[in-house]
Length: 434
Image 1 (cartoon, rainbow, N blue to C red):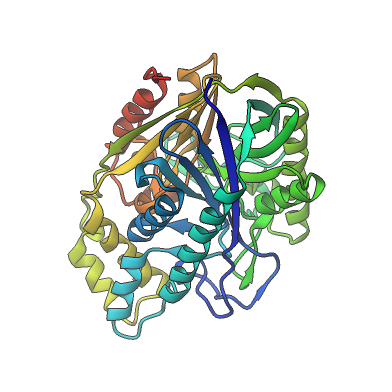
Image 2 (cartoon, one colour):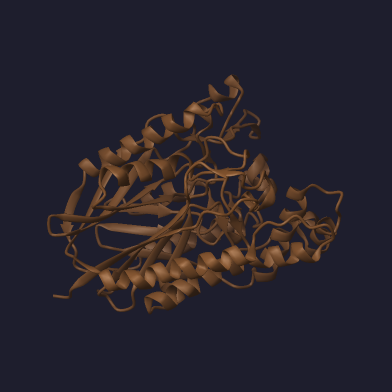
């Protein structure tokens, strides 16, 4: 019988004063309401170590993602294909695209999206934290899985009218009572908690839930927002259990039905997530851990074909100081994506038998998560979105015809739905070798 071990690691990744937030699109750092963290686990005992990591950042794209993945792989004595990095996606947090930042710095009168020296420090500190954690591994014998409904948090952002077009967009903070009163729409109401145990002693709890995690932002006050705060509240309650949180396929899901942007709502939303975390923990069933398989499916997503997404037009916008910072920096992100679009994005699946954990890139719509779970009705499928965010949003094919916010800024075309679904099916249905 093989022996399995778990390592856990954590590092502070809070940006300094003046650092850009959300890619430079909003107010930079003016203060810190709560620190940002990079948290991770390393699974050992089945060949190459597996690394699962989550950042309290808005997004990590392209070269930034490659560099972080490589650094963590080296620290864990594994290969990048066995490392997955995700963002929780609060907006008062950094957005990292190294190549885009280099392009921005070459433009006239640039407004930075990322401090490259800060990013290098973070890359080193997180990889050093992982390396140090390998000195303190603990045996693990069991896994656990529990789930609970989250009440009055998630709602679908896209409200489609009778003509088949998006009539309302329900943002994270929706001021209009008329829009808030629309039905929840398509969501996944369940929070799922995967845990690792040494006999009767719990070691780590990994939570998965699909919603944009913003209550309010744009004021320069750094925060992991309500999902990160719920995770920290759970950590404070159970300090002996390492707590992580992954945002699922939440590209078209926000808290907008239940949040008008009032600051008091951050704590209310935090406590609703926390309550579900606690309930999922109490509902946990344990199973002997007999091993796992790790599957990788490289995927190439097609770039948008419209002229406004092309490199020539994007460079024109980037070089124009009269354009807003958001438009100029977004143009740099578009160029960065086109420069790497031929390099595949690795989708991965951790198969633990009773539980499969699917790791997706970008901001996928919640329908991908629901379909993945339907493919394996006898198993628990946990989904982490917001991996390599080079794609931006990954809508459904029909979404481009419906209109609305997400398809207007997504960097990939409508063919992506079929490509992504094929990859998901392959990852979930392939029988792993133990």
